[in-house]
Length: 220
Length: 286
Image 1 (cartoon, chains in turn red, green):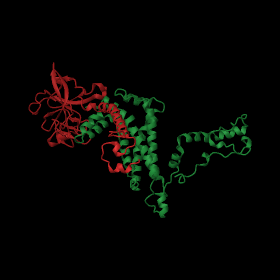
Image 2 (spheres, one colour):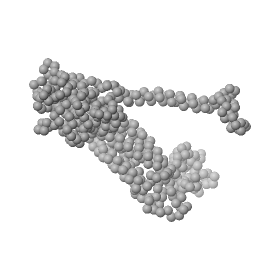
Image 3 (cartoon, helix red, strand yellow):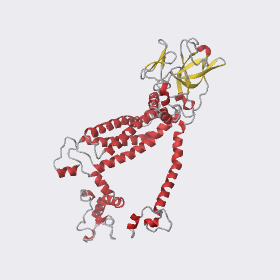
Image 4 (cartoon, one colour):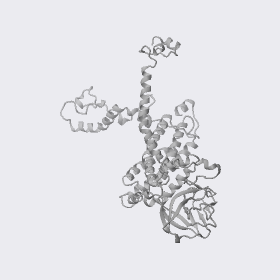
């Protein structure tokens, strides 16, 4: 206190004694008050991070993990499906959720004269989730189109966008035939040329520069 | 500071010593809150003494609490604060919103005693509340319709604040807090909508989450966070339940406290149609 002028005259000295700190030790460069403040704050910060970061990772974990892969699900005999129209079938996307995981899909036989892509899949299984915001689309046999009741999205027979706000074709599922029965597996998304992509959320673009604004899930 | 606040109301002031009781001594002051009435070592007093003691017991309890908490200056500052001339019924919309919040909190706590946040049980337990539990339909109905009432009241309160210009300096911070409160109340509506887990709430949430997924870059991550995975299901329901029950209401209550503190500290504004009458008067009022 006594040498206040000295404190202001030599503020740049590394030693607390030179800076005029009360009770300074010789050779001390950090005041004990400042040392304790820094210590208390860092220990508090470490302790908070010790529970905060794991809790945050716990909450954000699902962003970085793969979901449970869809098991192959039986949707009927090969004879049930033709090439000219879709047959609605119910599969369960999330068996753990019980009935809440059920969803309708539309299935038909692959038609070599019409279908130009995805020749490796013997059947075309199209989701009922609109690629705009995820409402349930309905297949209308009379017009051979899919229509969404929410915002008027229209898809043609292949599931390509024919009108309205959807940004990409309807998602599809992998299909295979085992012992004469048709099975449906993982969902995948398609761009406007019906090229396959990892499954995306509705409203994620897959064409042009837009696709870079909607990244896939980190794990895929 | 103490001169600006009004004096204590009459019922809170210590009663003056009455002539003829407590031996009639002028120094026997019963008002300091420490000596129980009629407790000066004598026989249990007459029926009048007991009656007086009973009459003062409320004051004594309040005095005991006040001496230890120092709450009365705060309460007096809050409850007897000056309000501008022209204050009218529109100024009650904020209190009405807070009352709606309290009503939502109370009915929500009691709904949580019957509700089960599980995909296989949520719908059944909600139906059980409506159809089986005594007054269940009423309490669930109050919670459901109360949410709409609360959002309506918030918008009316917001419109009042905007039209009256009450968001201007120095109340911008309170406007910002109010906007956060509005967004969090809408988030309460969004998370609560899923909980009955019927077809409507399920698909409304599917669409609601996908609307958030449509935001560029962060959208897909936000949607995954809300769903707790790639598909809406068991984790989503548990997540929405935790957000609806714990995280958002806690933040709401804390921010309502901050909002109220600023209202009490800064005072309310006069209606815009009222002109200041005199310089010094207006300085007092504003």
